[in-house]
Length: 244
Image 1: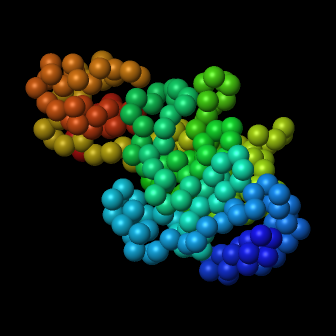
Image 2: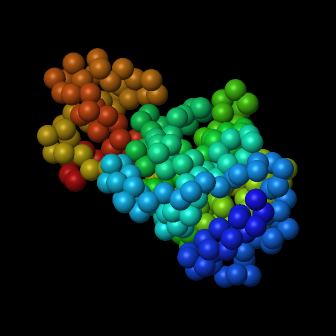
């Protein structure tokens, strides 16, 4: 197992263009022995990655694409640290996020190692990084969502260096903030069609987590999709409805 993982990680480092000096030491990879005898799987095909991106409308970061084509996922006995491509899908929320009414379409669950799901925001690139990695959070354990890495590449390297341990729960770990605050900061508000602009002030007065989009749609004579479109626009903090 150790030699196979060493080989795959070495090929991934070379493919992505990572400085070999930053690669995890063989001893760190060997520490995974016993946690799962087969953490890797056969790689997926480029055409399937392309199909996933067309279906969801977002491009995966190159470092994640490269890993999936070497190993379609990454597993330990507690669960997948990285899902196979077919299981990377829209994030399931486990924690309430202040000021968030409709989850961004760019939030995808990347893995489910044990305590909380690990997710990726494909809408933007973190300054100096790539698509950020964040945790889902969990209301029952009073754990808020947190950005834990500025890129898949950085997160995966740290994960491998630490033997697959969920190091972001270590005492003293410093996260990069709230994923929704970061999303609003680094992505523009989704556009709102002119036909819906005059309705935005009314919808704003009703917009809150758990709002009944069906009744709002019925009262305005629009579709639930239209209501969601207005929600997505307004939750970015937009208050000017006069122009684009």
